[in-house]
Length: 361
Ligand SMILES: *Cc1c(COP(=O)(O)O)cnc(C)c1O
Image 1 (cartoon, rainbow, N blue to C red):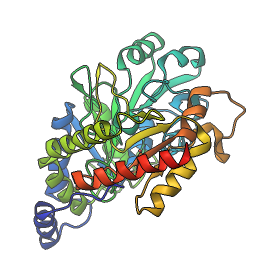
Image 2: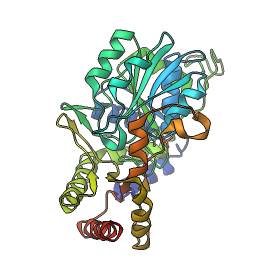
Image 3: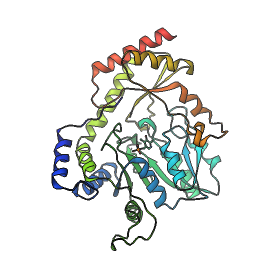
């Protein structure tokens, strides 16, 4: 699906980190990674974390979200988004997807905003940006905090501006299959110095930065190691290439599959620059997805089904009707989209897919 692009630069940095003895969560690569990544996205402060879920939990905690609060979240995404809300004691309120580009639908948010709503987490799903203008307008009107989950969208843009630069805090994941990886890892970005300081303290057990072992509050251990950051620093240097590759893979799939009338291909709205994290497609009817995926598996092609809407999963099961997400989920799946996939492999995948569709319909 997405073998990471780990090369000589990463190895050189990792060896340097290991040789220096700074293999834990202090060392020069951490600050370098934080500041270079923040600069790339267009935010002032970076706070590196142990993973992307920790980044979301840290962001919500720093914003003071807790028991009795409600947080609007998209239902069609990875479960970590809802879980991070649950960890704080707050309640996730699920929002449907937009039918054209699959991210949170701004028109479904207003009606679900109550007195208790304190924040919105939006997710740029599968690398496609959310429609930020109506989201920020709603947030201003109701005085809600906005957290952007950019775990799948490093380098994506909304109207020419990088995602991760719109919100109070944006959160990234650097898991092995994400566009930039540190193995496991994450980061929170913000322009607010106070929030950055608060996140640094919470990341380190709530310890007072000027008074060792004096803990003003209950924090977490959500630190990133210098070894992970060493990989991250090397990854940033090739970020433009990593993003360009994702877009080229999508363009190639798009050309090869353009004539398949049973497919809906990964969208890109006129205002969007998607980074096509995993190249995503929909089959026309949900009864054939498993057959098509099975056919591809037999041909040696790995695929991933779309996420289940979170409101249909056991920990969050609610009698909700979010029809767009419920119709998208069983029809969607992702094709191999790693940074090292070559044209020949893309052609093979597309040919297998076309064959699968012919034998199924
Ligand atoms: C991957 C992902 C996460 C979680 O990141 P981890 O680093 O695996 O904890 C959160 N949100 C979304 C949308 C993701 O895709």
